Length: 302
Image (tube, rainbow, N blue to C red; front, top):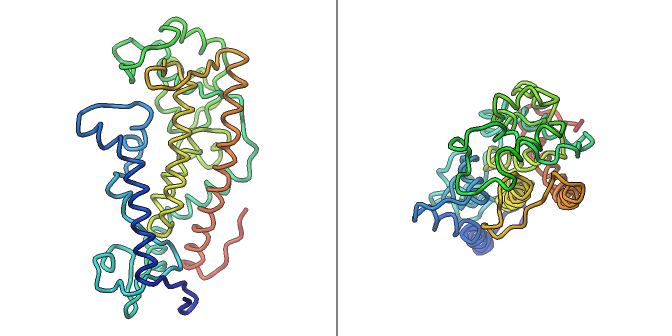
């Protein structure tokens, strides 16, 4: 049903969508929630809840996104959620309030996503950031102590020393050991993120989940979960290509220190990059819609 340019979902429609989303989140987070209750850790899967701030409970809250009204929702708790408004019995995202409150952040996200979308991927880093994070590091300071280093400390250091480090992402680079920092071809900073992020970077792809949550509730929850699934798959590749022995986690290491391993890494990366490009453009559409509401002037993607 249309209502002044808005798609309005009947109560039964949106309740079904809400229930389906909750079930999807429950399935995606069940193992993490179980481990958390037992005090156990998983260095691959827990990343999405330790590196990113969104909790399973918050992720479970369903949002229809911009331009969708929920019929007969005015008397329900969601009508009082931040950045929502009610018109008679129809509840929807208050795009004007959201765009005004978060205008600076929305512009940053849009500028970053647009810049990445317009760049050629750099494919020669081979996820060496995880190696640089343990380079010449004492054993007791290694982050994932439950996983052994496949090549041992000396072998790990030798891989770093025999490769050119090409990390472009500030939130990977900032965890480099002091000895690894000067080995990197670039010195990423927060103020150069828009200039340096690029589509061949695992972290730039994983961060689509972060940007989706920061644009919530304007982003439909289906898109948030699509970004979550991509981030999970990218993190798995990240750890497979890392110096850690992930066989105990049921994964096959990718030996990026070898020519065959480099080819395997790129073969695994390409379909994930394709998924990331499609999600990035969907998020750009949300950014453009919000900025258009904020300024009244159509936004042309660069």
